[in-house]
Length: 248
Length: 380
Image (tube, rainbow over all chains, first blue to last red; front, top):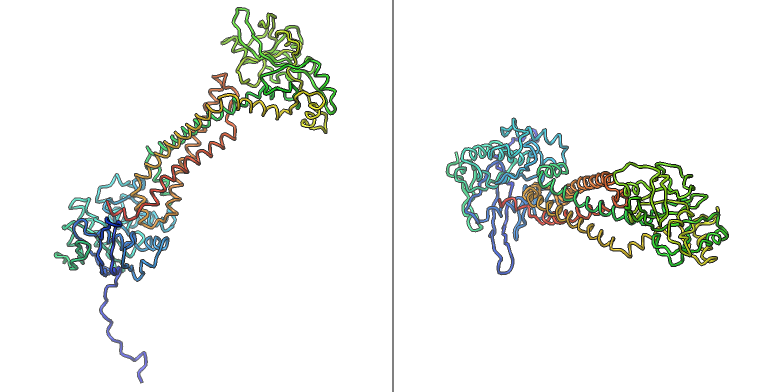
């Protein structure tokens, strides 16, 4: 008589990337009455973990609106976003803010580093938001800065750093609290070609993680090679979902 | 996050100092003007304060303040002494005379005539001379500020002569008195002596001052005096406030000082409010980033309020410090401002004004921060 110990074990299924972001019927309108404008038209998309997803498209196509909704900064007019299985529509007020603080990291086009804080202090901000003691937060921030190659510039203020270095500080800040979703808005737009490449290499090597979803909004065709997946938007819709042309 | 708020504030030195000095300037203006106002109003009652022994003041029933005096008959003092419950009562003269130096230079002076025997009402702080010398013929004391006014730049000296009502007076002592409202020199003589230095009137007695026996309150003594004599009788506190209220109601001083104080408030609020608001506006994208990173509105309010409180506290301290320095220096250099300092009520009141200024500045800034959509950080 077969027992559990003697039951033949089937081969495990091939691992599938978990879905980090699930958008269902996302629509967004701005304004009211005659000035009402529909920016997103019922977007359905799943974005998995462990990959770098590029969101591209012409200005005004709705990229920024979509990532604002995905990141929980904006409410959709219709539809819902689920982040790691948690529908955002179920989170209100401070619960949503807390969820965002724990699970979402941001990299902004203009870095948005606080000019009066050093690099290490800037990186520590998300940990301070999470009410970690300042000393421990700055120590951890120093470790992350080291990982992005700025271990020697811990005490530098933003105005003492180059654009590329500032964006690396911003990436360190976005990752220091180990978020499950990283949203990057035009991270290379304000950088020269070389710095842009460095930043994208860094995102690819440090940010991409099996448990993390990374979305990069970009206009910059030079960085497409770094994406694992490319979503192209036009007129408030995703019109192309593909693998970037020069993806290895 | 309070630490981040503090660092943000310190990072923009120009606006930080601008807001701090806006508050400080407003505080200086308000504290200084309010203190001078309180000091001036308080001076109106200084002649009463210098007669520390008196608990009861008796005067003409139409008297409205301590300066405009309708004399009463000299015999009134005996009637007051006869009122049941009075322990003692003496005469006090207060009037204005013209003091002329031998070379013809003259000044209007406040002439005090204190009781010949008890010296009730005589100055307590004697800088030169002996109070007993006041009993000598033609003897007077003069206050230090008065001496400096009549003989500017000259050292204090006894034996100088002045002439009042064509009668020679010899300065036998120099004293300190509380600064009078009119900033005239104060000349002190005995009651008998004082009446020699003024034009003769049928009635010359300014006040009868006294105190009740133990067990009778000044208010009760006043009630009995009024009933028995028909004179106005006031307790010390009543007379002080009657005098102060008279000047409040019948001069333009409260309005003038009030306008300056309001201007101080407006200037302080405008400078501090505008600078702080600009500071917040320039940091709006950072506040937006913090919002995106998960700083909720309650913590953002705390950050803005902390920044405003720091500006308010430092601005207040600087402003009050400058006002203290002003009174310290001016009290030595400007005799007219001697004795004026910052009452604790003014300091607390100004603190309240600073809270109002800071609340105003914070509300303007908070409105922008709270209405800020965190998604703004994606708009470059």
